[in-house]
Image (tube, rainbow, N blue to C red; front, top):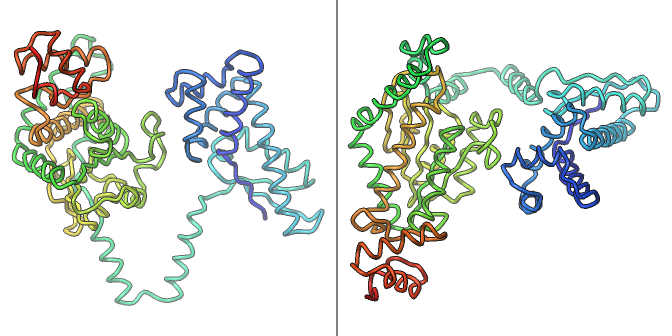
Length: 454
């Protein structure tokens, strides 16, 4: 038996080279290049070159999906990339088989990896190349994921060693350390008000959506004391050199990254003061990533590699409250001494004592208007909470005077005009004098308002 593993990285790398070569030689940006820009949310070829220079292997591998989709639309460049990839895979697999079996021996090649298993047309192409190089070869897809081999091995070890009282106790303890919901999360229930959403007149649907959102502030207001506690621990962290981390998957992760990314321009903070971590990394910001939220170990590793310490605050965001990636991060962060917070919308969680965060905010927002779509009320409520966390924390550490952003970073014409008006409001100077004060202060508002010109 030999294994042929489809290399998404190889296909993605070839795609990058092919579209740039086509553009250089023909002066025309190919259709595959358009797909790559769209997938990566980039605007022009030079952006793609810059991205490729900094991208890691999993990010480049993600481009294979675009090549496979383009080939289905008979894109010539994509077709050539995949034909070449199929030949390389077949050559590698046959080279391996020659080390394990004699020529003309019956050999079964097993295809594994998402590229080969989820794209049967490409898998069939690889199979044809294998049969050319090894006549009579049997080619089949793997029946179960490779991880099941480890599961079976563990079962055999338990069976051979027996399960005594100690093993039973260890398994029971592991079972107790799992976060569970004691009943269905409200985010997964059906909303009786929207049962006829598909037949509802558009105006009624608009009114219904707005009325659902209108009830959110009252439900969050009931959490005021806990929101206050979160702001206080964030302020304490900032004052002693700590940082704030948001951790989430899907919509929750994206909202955390969004709030973190807006702090440097709004409050002139260092980019690492508030950080957003999303399951699956950068690629998951604009694409759904299968299984990313289920990887608790990845969440724990993120805490380790971001260097989380006892001075930091880690806020886990999970609409239903059970996301493994988030709990992996919270568990590791708590173990490293950080202050941990959970934001969710499921008050029915059973959280083991060893994992329980210092603060839990878990209001019941009721079911979503579109069943299970937590980008709706849960997403809106999350945004409201994160707005309060960072805005009020920044107020407390002196980055706001009255209701003005005195640490804003004026990086464009609109913001420079706003900076001038802020200096005017705080000093009484006219527009020209306020602008001169900012220019002399390198556009740092705090410095400008100290000694404005009149």
